[in-house]
Image 1 (cartoon, rainbow, N blue to C red):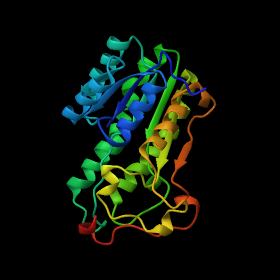
Image 2: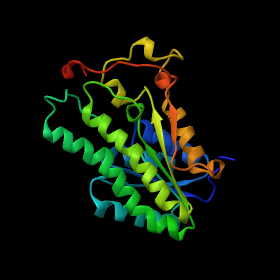
Image 3: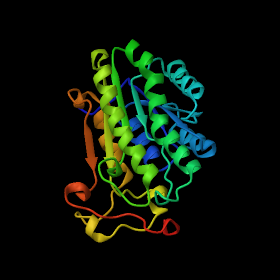
Image 4: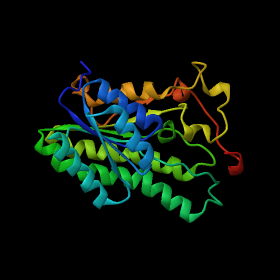
Length: 253
């Protein structure tokens, strides 16, 4: 049921890591994909490897004009628009008392305002297609608090709330909006910080990007047609119990 034949998707932060895994999974399920990122060399190389089912465009998610160009490219190259995956994100480290305003504003701009910009940009295209799916990649940090990551935590909780607000507003247009909350996944971003203690890994391992990608395919497809405004948690049991964890020293991140 999780086939995406004849559907067109746009994935942000798609050049590597979880975004690249999502792109591959969507194409494998039959979709055509616009790869959007600021990492031009990586994004162009990924599109070249995939071939005719993918196109690359430079997209800074904080810039609405670039969003408009990305949606236009999807419609021009592939004829329609069905799925948005808001995956682009950054992380900054620092305690609340000493996190710089520049790091706070940059994190919120990319992780939260970038998602808002994307949702706003694709509404007309999804409405004209008769509906569609928006998948917002949040985090386990959108369900719990962590020390040393105030901007990241705030942005990911914001994505969770924005998802619910957008889902209620867009349901009448058959546009579904859901959030995905990965825990520790083996990506360059997660590897930039210290390894999680084993007590936070009930299944005994970190997740794989493909596992996130498979969940995104489900949410993009008609198999999840009755799901909107919901959180889908993929964390190996991390958020199932009480947790106290974070970075006491930002330099250790």
